[in-house]
Image (cartoon, rainbow, N blue to C red; front, side):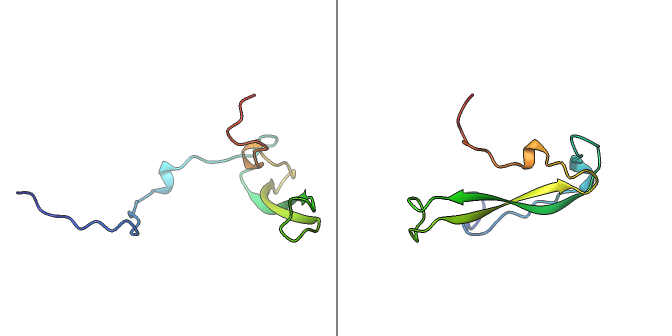
Length: 84
């Protein structure tokens, strides 16, 4: 019979990732490779808000430190799963 291996569903597997295995990300406009954290805001209507009052919801994005551009891949999807 084979060796019994204990299974813990709460334990995450340790994956070794080398920096050389990763793909570099560049600004789509100026090819700069550095980005800064920024926030966009979406307005939540009073009808949808759990408090019954209109509020702002911050959405984290990253802007190019050279030209300020936000890559398309950093923007939130308007309708995830929807096809054009």
